[in-house]
Amino acid sequence: MKETAPPTSFYRANDWQRFVQYLRHTNRFALTYHWQNFLNVLIETAKKRVTTIARGSEFFRARKGITWMEEEFGGERPAPYSKLEMGPPPAHQAKEGRLNPPGIPYLYLASDIETTIAEVRPWIGLELSVARFETTRDLRAVDTMRDEPPGIELVPGEEELYMERDPKTYSAEEKEQHIWGDINSAFSEPTSPQDSLLSYLPTQYLAEVLKMNGYDGVIYKSSLNPSGYNLTLFDPNSALCGYRHVYQVGALKYESERTQ
Image (cartoon, rainbow, N blue to C red):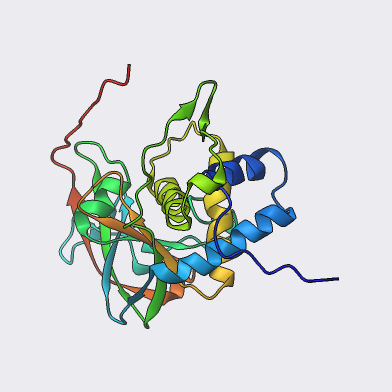
């Protein structure tokens, strides 16, 4: 029997959206031949998006709340959380996040102080503990920030899926642009406490695939501070906590857009 060569490009431009539906509503622990091939192409095209983060690079992490430290001659003063508390929770306390499943802690960091504060969705007057982290070795991360999903007309009644076109009408480059643009959006789009936990499944699945293929983390845009970005490290020991400070939120800026 003649062996079929593995695919080298994506089949459909909307396959990330279809993969999301597959994981949420069909199977999430076993893949069909089509979806395994889809992941194989994802792994191959991820190589174009690798960024090396040098040892000693600086990132930041914020937590809502502070602690209090006793003064030498009585009284207390505000103080940030300890280095241990500024890291991810232990495995038995780790809740699921955008990239990590429950019980497997990852380290969520941001490029700067403004971004890390924005990412905790603060309110005016909130006191936070903010820590500087420094990477302990050279790291290889998949950077999705340059990928933007181009606009595509939607099928009425199927707004969550892109309109199907004959796959031959898309070039391999266009399909790759569509899919990685969708992935960038999936990593960076904000979620709310009311969102179903199913919303995390696709990005958690992809994060584990990237981790199993030797990558140290994922870089993605911050939807809450366009001038910054986020970095999630699969191994929390890849960066160490350094100095910590107390911050208090003084002002917030909200923007709105009419959608209909």
